[in-house]
Length: 261
Image (cartoon, rainbow, N blue to C red; front, side):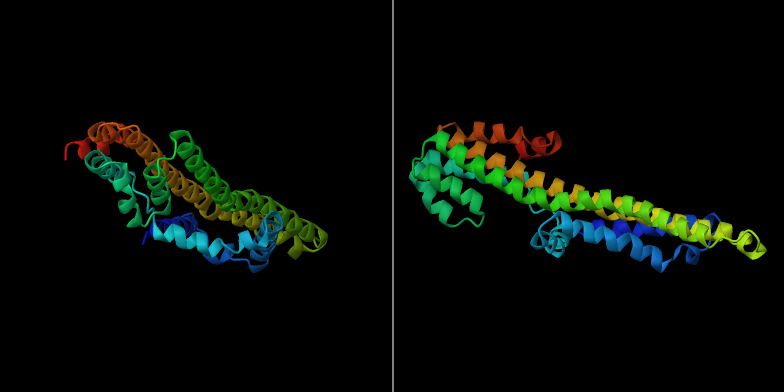
């Protein structure tokens, strides 16, 4: 389980609280339930209005994916393709069919089966690229939800600030000394909503969107390794060269360590 995201969020809010205290303020001065309602409620409503409800309901699934961590290790796929290249060189392409039957990754299994069935390279590449395109379309909806949330939260924070300021000015009585004395308190309460919107956007929505986008890119990188690998195997390229070609896609440090095994 990858707890880096919730831990980082806790640290971020702890630092905000610490900053408030160090500057001589009181945390309770920043706790305002009406402001929370005015920001969170419209933000969530706008997100639901922007996407099909079925997509918004996948938010718990997105959190589970993030907590599950990145399960796509490019070096793992390089090793799979290298092993398959060795098998194909020693026993022929038909031997890959038996290997494919034991694979859990549906994408790798499909790619290997097409090669074993002697599908022409152009068709193999086109079909597998189509799978990646469809995957990107599905995943892009997920991170787009949070990108919209990042745009809506500060905007509704400002709207809530305006609402608070209007109410404050409507009830401001300069003839009453108490009313004038409370001006600063009421003004600060109005500005809290802007803080809420900014915190929501920058500690929740933007990081979540970036995390999902990064995990998607890791998956795509691994699938591209598979495509390049099966096409190289199909062309009968030497297994050592196949591994070298695929290692070039990796971080140089990781590639150097793997090449030295």
